[in-house]
Amino acid sequence: MYKNKISAVVFLVLLIIVVLATYSFYLGPVSKNSDTKPIEVVNGSSYLTIDPLLKKNNLIKSTFFYKLYIKLSNPQPLKAGIYYLSEDMGTKEIVNVLSSGNAIDPVTITITFKEGLNMRGVAKVIAANTNNTEKSVYKILKDKKYLNQLIEKYWFLTDDIKSEKVYYPLEGYLFPNTYEFYSKDVSVKEIFEVMLDEMDKQFKPFKNAVENSKYEIHEIITLASMIELEASNDSDRRDVSGVFYNRLEVGMTLGSDVTGYYGAKMDDWTNGLGVHIYDCNGYNTRGDCVSGIPVGPIANPGIESIRAAVKPINHQYYYFVADCSGKTYLNSNEFGHNQTINRLRREGKWCDV
Image (cartoon, rainbow, N blue to C red):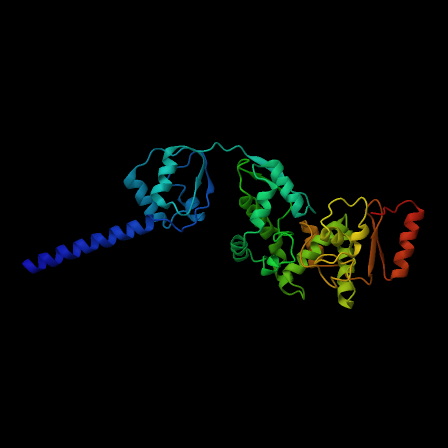
């Protein structure tokens, strides 16, 4: 009888130890990642209703143990606002921050990223509308660990974006749109991932078509970025895409001026390519260095340019040129192409840029 009591006590002690250890484990930090995340608590929320938000942002290990801790600790009432939390804090520290009431009042900002904007333009827009600098944008783009995390997260990002010849790894994948952020303190990473989330949403309907294409995802987005800058309306975009595909099929260079400007890092096109027309880099399809598709996108394309790149129109044209109004003219051979240019010059419709 005495031995049974000892065994029961030992078992109870061991059980308590296991329970406490389990409790302590599930209240501990999710990871060692100290990067803060802005968590917005809306009016009417309570500790027991925000557990999905905390779990979604990978801030707690278990909603059950989180709720258990809340019931046992009975913290101060939760106030609405934005709290900065990180994965290395653990449940206790997170609740301490939330119960402190030191939230940032959300003052939302709206930022518009236009179609056809390249990464240099994106950096300028971010610097003009937030508390980030252009330099901080470029610094994030050089973070290989972060890029690898993005590649794991988004199906359309591949190791191609890390090529040494690529100027800016996320070029072409930041979907152009108008976005709302919680304040000017929004981080570059948050902006990137909101734009990548939108890219995921917009690009996903084309996933099967892309996977069945003879070209890789990176190549298709590169073509889409070229189409975005070469054509001014949806019909012309499909025509231009058809020209690019036809030229690729027979081994012709794409001969696109916009790739030359990007390769030379020229954002002002008013004086033409000039001496840069034959620059040798991974982008310039006007020279002899790039025989096919450039090493990467040259701008962030809109959905219609992406659609045109995935589903080009089928025709027999190999040349195109646009007049000053942006209207595109197609030709099947170089002779006809040059005739069109001469006619546009005679009619005063040619803009030599």
